[in-house]
Image (cartoon, rainbow over all chains, first blue to last red; front, side, top):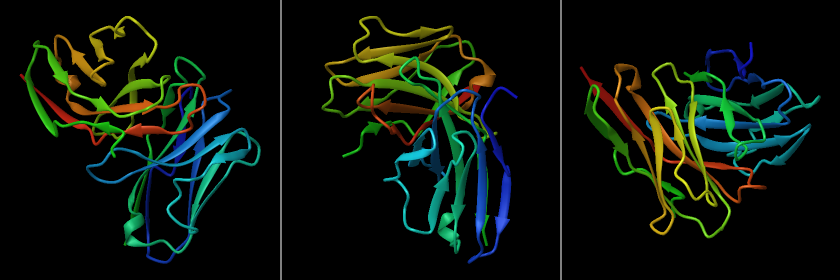
Length: 114
Length: 116
């Protein structure tokens, strides 16, 4: 497809388990973003990649969260020792460069920690 | 301080009428971009419209227009001729500075319901 693809679309996991969420950006987009959206809130920034490197990871809440983008395309958000408070929609977006470097989002991965 | 403020948690509009969704922003940068996104119940964030801080004319995209008042730091979204499919959450966002800013700051959103 032509849009941002995220898998899985839904994930239920037990507290304390490890989770990986995958994002495949729009082809040719060098910038990739991860956001987290809790119920009733707007998206909150987690991390931004330009190419393979994390240019800004200031939004990651703690060291249980980590993200990689080894080849500058697909990215994986990794959450260790999940907690119930991690339950949210995790949105991935990529940037076209114009206008205004608009970012285009995927449909999100709904994570529920029980 | 909040970068983006949306003061209307919920709005109702009659089908075929126009509606304005409010957004105010806070920045000291001269170069920034303002965006509106629609989020239906499916969860996907859909880009609607963009306004650059240096753009002199208000942005328009089909039935969407952005009422940009720079001195008041407001960027309200106007939807004309509302349709039932417009029922969704609407988020205002800002990128600052426009050329190098890494983060998009989002408001808390406005839930729009279009009444038949």
